[in-house]
Amino acid sequence: PFDMLVVGAGPSGASAAVYSARKGIRTGVVADRFGGQVMDTMAIENFISVKETEGPKLVANLEQHVREYDVDIMSGQLAQKLIPASEPGDEIEVQLANGASLKSRSVLLSTGARWREMNVPGEKEYRGKGVAYCPHCDGPLFKGKRVAVIGGGNSGIEAAIDLAGIVSHVTVIEFDSKLRADEVLQAKLRSLPNVEVITSALTTEVLGNGQKVNGLVYTDRNTEESKTIEPEGIFVQIGLVPNTEWLKGTVELSPRGEIIVDERGQTSVPGVFAAGDVTTAPYKQIIIAMGSGANAALGAFDYLIRLPAR
Ligand code: FAD
Image 1 (cartoon, protein in one colour):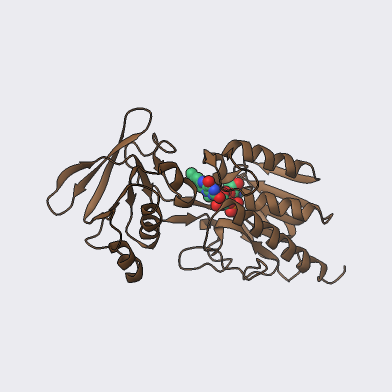
Image 2: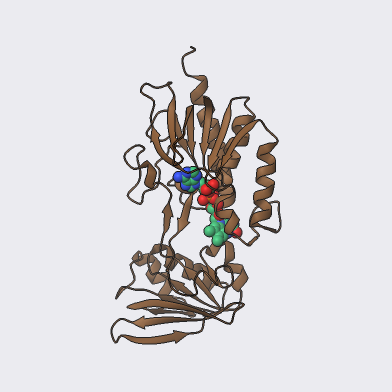
């Protein structure tokens, strides 16, 4: 059995594993895919102290750093069920899709999140070639260009306001007949000269020239007419989904399905901690996920040293 089992090996899990191993406790990492979302990222320019890198390169560095320590890495494994300890201090069980089960005195959940996709033709093909999901990450790549933001909820309108300061023009596309964002955000949006809002619009296709995005097709839901606009970038802001389907009914989740943690990363289940994008942490970024992984690992260590000796 492990003292600490980390589930998920994105930036938060990798960071937690290093912090845990450095305490000299038996540490395991089980993950579907080492690196998580960072594997899908092209240019990274906001990982402070590294001016510029690429996702796969950062992941290779992460893995190398974890492998410097005595950590048992199990990649390509999907966790399917968490079984809390019968009594605090007893072993917690994590069952895997392959039928195996792992036991540990503390568990750190860092299974991350995934951007909800539009699922329209062209979206996958042009991902990273104009189709983007993170304005904090990719906004500056579209400096002076025309972009569309898909989604008129809080994240979409925040993205539109943010981008309006960088790009030349923003078109917000909302499916509903009105924006759903908070009124303060809508008021701010209306005050900006270079933003246009199109409501009752269903995005149907991303267009491109083979290399990058050059258009977006939507259906006007009032007239059923198909229309085309010509953005050079498309920010999809229709939700970030936490990877917690397998945890329903065990750890306490927010209405959005995010794991609720305290300031030490402790969840509602004793000995189970969580970090990174899978939690209620409001901002989802690599540097934040790493910090939160370190924080939760230290929280778990504090928990372990307070368990009665046996
Ligand atoms: P994740 O990176 O999501 O990792 C989750 C881990 O859990 C993975 O190892 C996954 O395989 C594993 N997992 C999930 N479910 C299970 C399960 N049931 N069983 C076992 N393992 C499981 N942030 C920046 O700071 N700068 C950027 O430039 C940037 N660009 C981005 C570009 C894109 C396209 C995307 C998608 C994200 C970007 N982000 C960027 C955000 C950043 O990638 C995330 O905030 C960060 O990766 C979150 O780390 P995490 O460890 O919490 O989760």
